[in-house]
Length: 213
Picture 1 (cartoon, rainbow, N blue to C red):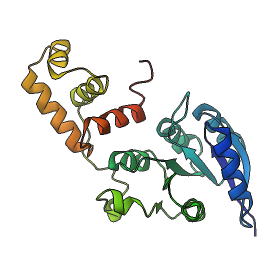
Picture 2 (picture 1 turned 180 degrees about the vertical axis):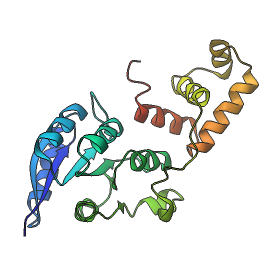
Picture 3 (picture 1 turned 180 degrees about the horizontal axis):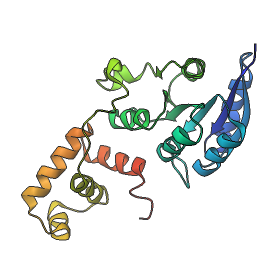
């Protein structure tokens, strides 16, 4: 049987080495390349056309979300397994909406990642079992390309919130009332299933809003 060809993308070399040992230890899969940032991941995927990319979400140059969006068009035959320590619903929605067909938590047992690789290689979506315990996620509704999208103003309010600005400071910057800021913030958080300011900051990091800060 031809082994599943896997591209490993993680900016920590030690993590990549551990994952490579795990994957190469399986009789039905083989690591064909490694990448330490999103840009290199896209380049390797286009050149090698692996069956699966195991994609760390937090990477330099291009993060996992940005890389997944590019891979969706640049290497559509390659399946993507997003690998992250965050089980936030907003993370899951964004990564699956960007084209990932697998989502695995770093803190889960290694068997989760192996099952995810095998599943997505066969064209079957795989979500980490730990997600059911951490968030109220209906697997039957994912990916949710029809999920409510934030307006540009809602996105801007959340971006400024993530940067640490108060409602009054945001109101002054955008020339709107504090009450309007509160409405935009509430609507944006509701649409993206963000429950706290920490969630907002994580979401902003995922979107690359904090890159130049």
